[in-house]
Image 1 (cartoon, one colour):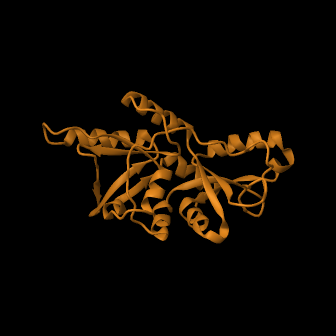
Image 2 (tube, rainbow, N blue to C red):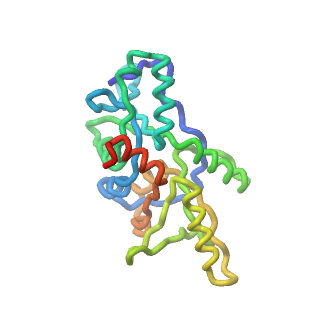
Length: 236
């Protein structure tokens, strides 16, 4: 399915600094498995095919816009319907698993890229954090919030005997983890702090320099987003 070449329908994502440099280690299937629990929202036609933005000359890579919140997809569809009522009426919002969508996009024969559109409320949280730290709002993408220990080490947790490093899509979900750690830390040791990176930066980094510790990173999705996705697929 094709988008009209004008006006542009996939604007650049809001700016957010990726200030946490992470080398990569995982294969494409392993990354897809990491992304599997993360829902996204796309616009699709009646047969379920994703709406794509295509180069004006018909050559090169097509792009699928993937919203991290349903509200973003709803707003986008409303604007699109005003611009092109016929096209808008033929589309619906569809919940997708990012792992499956990302893995399909990696296949060269598909020639498809994913443009992640972040939750604007979390972008504002990222901007507020950067302003507080006196850092510029450079870079872009979907912000991820993590906990950083002194010496630029990431905070890890142990659940059921498995060690993991949580990466939160919501700063509010990270807050109780930081509070719990800082209250229970040994007296006199420094507190854990917020560390900010982006989903795009992490995905790209995972495919580069080996670092086995990064296998421990696990995405933490806000419950409201998971509930939105479940509602679109009938609660399954």
